[in-house]
Length: 145
Picture 1 (spheres, rainbow, N blue to C red):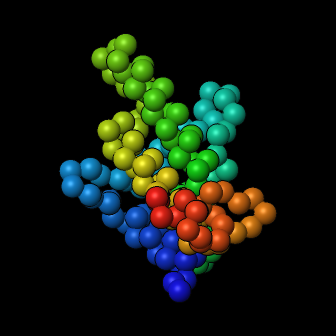
Picture 2 (cartoon, rainbow, N blue to C red; picture 1 turned 90 degrees about the vertical axis):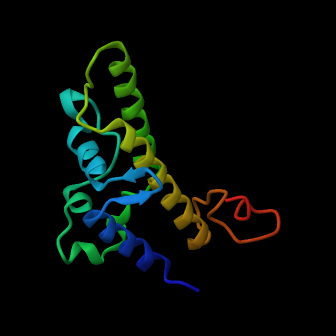
């Protein structure tokens, strides 16, 4: 079996350096950085638990699995909501309220969700199990994923 936490850390460390291109779609680490920078602005509550160590990890921080939390359902949901708000604002005006690049942002959010689901699927069960974070069986959601 693969070392799932190590694979996730490697993906995160490479994603911080290079954009992910699939076809004509581009996922960018800068989108996550911009979400972190704008999250909690203007007196609003923060929607993620991201810290500087998640966004700009030191060499030591890059070895820690918990700093790969950027690929979580919480970050996916926060980014998706933020992008939808920006998109609605942009449709009513000729500019965007956010520095986030909306087109690449939705694809970046999709990659975050895929990585979250992949980690859940490969990491096994626990107390807070999801449909993918449990034992593999003929009836489990793993095959559909």
